[in-house]
Image 1 (cartoon, rainbow, N blue to C red):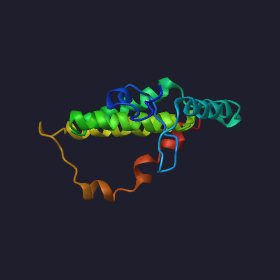
Image 2 (cartoon, helix red, strand yellow; image 1 turned 90 degrees about the horizontal axis):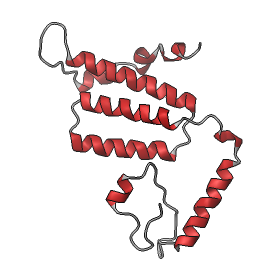
Image 3 (cartoon, rainbow, N blue to C red; image 1 turned 135 degrees about the vertical axis):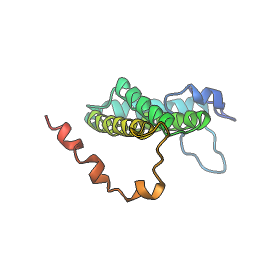
Image 4 (cartoon, one colour; image 1 turned 180 degrees about the vertical axis):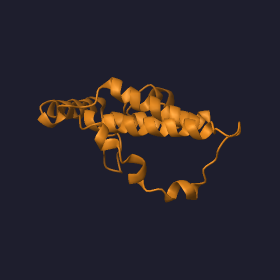
Length: 157
């Protein structure tokens, strides 16, 4: 989908896109003729298709799984619906622009799965029916390696 020369795409149209891109232009004249924009995009796609480093990219299914765990974690953490929608769209755009490898995507799914599980456990404490709250300072003092030490071990097999 290409935007209009003068105004680009509307927010509704952008919301329907899996990925977006902008072609840099000089500040004095920031728009491109549609045929020129299409030529640049198709040329870049052609160059990328011949690049052997593109092998092993994450599948759309894996990207949807990443988005699913992200959305679940956002919901469980209490982020409001409007903000979750913005977060999901932003993250979908980042995934669409990236050349995330299958291995990287799998590791990201594992981390997001663990975050979602941890959020589930903090919302359901064993000793009472009230919600458990972890302060920002408590969560910030934990070392990343403590929480993710088993990640590489799970994927070595």
